[in-house]
Image 1 (cartoon, helix red, strand yellow):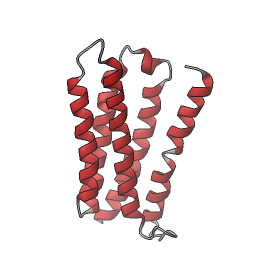
Image 2 (cartoon, one colour):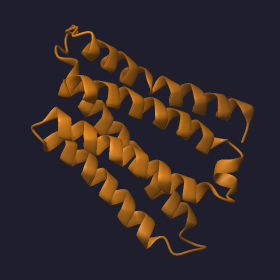
Image 3 (cartoon, helix red, strand yellow):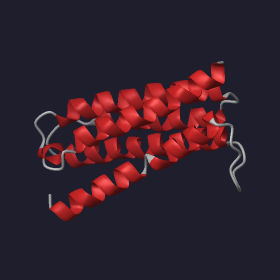
Image 4 (tube, helix red, strand yellow):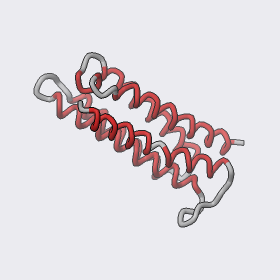
Length: 151
């Protein structure tokens, strides 16, 4: 992978963490946002979008590997994560939505770790170490908001 592609992957990856940071901070400080209002529903909806995006990455990896190995389980798994993300939007409670997203993000990372072992797709771009940092950042943001929401 070229250094230009790697830079874009890191830039967009860490740029995608900014809404989690901003919305979490706004929620913790009880700041209403212009055009958005309460940051909690925005945090849940953004989390659902990103969880769905990650499910799509798993789907893409399944398609990439379809010629050389069985990928039915990975395709089904990717769909389960997409449905989980959708469910977090349907629930009428911030607590359960955030909790399910935390579980979803952790499980996607687990599956990505299994996929990262020995593949050029991940080793060249250092994708998994970046995903680990991003997932930890997302989960920390969501846990802080969840903890604040409980109290």
